[in-house]
Length: 341
Image (cartoon, rainbow, N blue to C red; front, side):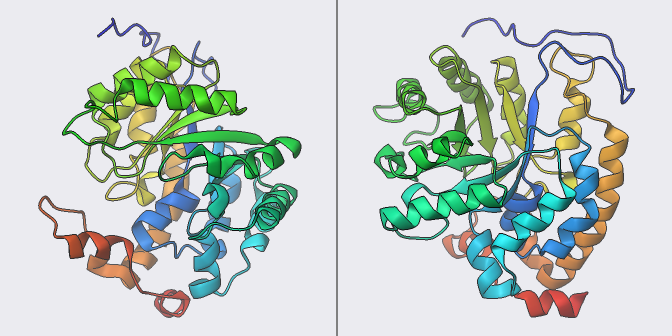
């Protein structure tokens, strides 16, 4: 393992207008998509997001994930909302921060492959309605499922973020299949396809801290585009993996604001901001502004707690297969949320 030379100490400064760090870690916030999808079965309504939208726009996020994944079908099935209107509404409040979405390649935001003309039209409409970053993945890392959507993303002048889904066949990184060479080659393939950034997408929270260091270090040495780490908190390791990835030179990290963090969601932003103060990788974020946003989100969280109750309790070691599924397949609908409000 090479020396950890990416993190250097600097002067401690808590002021919101402190000088920018020499190599700040960029942050993508997932609270308004993956956060509530992971904890509350994607039941976050547009009206729950508007009270914090303008404040979140002031933070300085690299991007905010607000769409894609399960939001599209959940808004139709349970929330009685128009997914397209959500983008347009949030865009009226969030004017500076780019919008990101999760795109399942040829599956778009559904659960099967769609025809090429449907895929092309969908990406065009998403871009027209305000989407800026298209985080594109295939669960098997089969990039043939990118061949239709990527040219449309590029033609629309939008950011194509290519994902490598992280998985293991061994207790730790290694073995004949999922080793460093595998991830490096996938990153190089994405860059060759025109990726504007490469994301290591750890949906299950499997990446261990020292493996994160080695994977990110390997990819950073092989591609010239920014490298992004997305790691769920499910195993409890992601906050430690973030720090090791930062030491390896990762460019962008995914987090959630603390009321929508932890459990099967993502690590919280606020501890990371404080940990990087006084280093050359300081985010530059104002912790007091984050506290103001959290006061509002905590009240929203109380509403969801009233609906979901014990269903969002922290995962325990030795969960049964049925208990794992229950964490992600919760039944409360829009009417339940309205009743609780």
